[in-house]
Amino acid sequence: MPGDPSPEPEPAPSKGAPPEKIKAWLHTVGYPLEFATARTLREAGFDARQGRSYMDVTASGGRVREIDVLAPLRETDQDVSVALVAECKYTVEKPWVVLTTTALLQPADVLEATLASDNVRPLLVGRARNPNVRGVPQFLEIPTRHGFSVVTAFRPLDQDSDAAYRAMSQVVGAARNVWSTETSQPWKLIWPVVVIEGQLFETADDGGEEVREVGRSRIMWHGASAARPVVVDVVTSDNLKAYAEEAYGALRGIQNLLSEKAYEARRSASEDR
Image 1 (cartoon, helix red, strand yellow):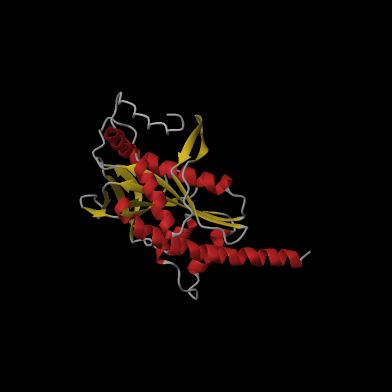
Image 2: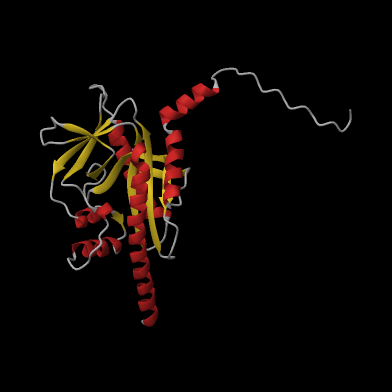
């Protein structure tokens, strides 16, 4: 009859892959991990965003790459930007192994290896080295044994490309791009982290004969920069919640310090006019 509601359309018959197969494929390429990472970072207080891209320029040309998760802190000062950049990898079938070495590094050494503006790094390093300044966040400490490289376990010997190495290079490249082009603020700090869905191991001795499973590891990464290493954290998805909360607290403290310095710089510039 006229005026009757139209009947619901019949679902289209399946012509190929069922939803379960699509879901399984999505897991293997890491998309659910990206969504879960963004959600966990938002719950910790970050303003996590997905779908951002950048131009990765190398000697062989340029390539558009996607930033899995860009997680800035909500702005407290117009001249300050602090953010975490995450690369997400599904590694269930092939665990990652962080190769570690023994070195006596202090929070100042970690801060020297951060992606930060030229005015930010010396400020933070100076505070970390000042014996009269207390409360340097534990997040900025580095264990006596720290990572210097990471490799994919069970990789075929005839396979030249290592997924772990590529992920480290990609997250540092993305973080460098965010640091240099994403924001125009003069006070900036960007922190790179790789989140993996799978197992993570560390070597526990200098001979590489002893390994232990860990939930997170910190690497002084030299692979993407000859001039200065970059600190990159690798975290399993099971340990991301605790890591995100700790990172947010430490980076928020840095943001507050930078906001104070930015305000003082503007006030000093105004008085000099």
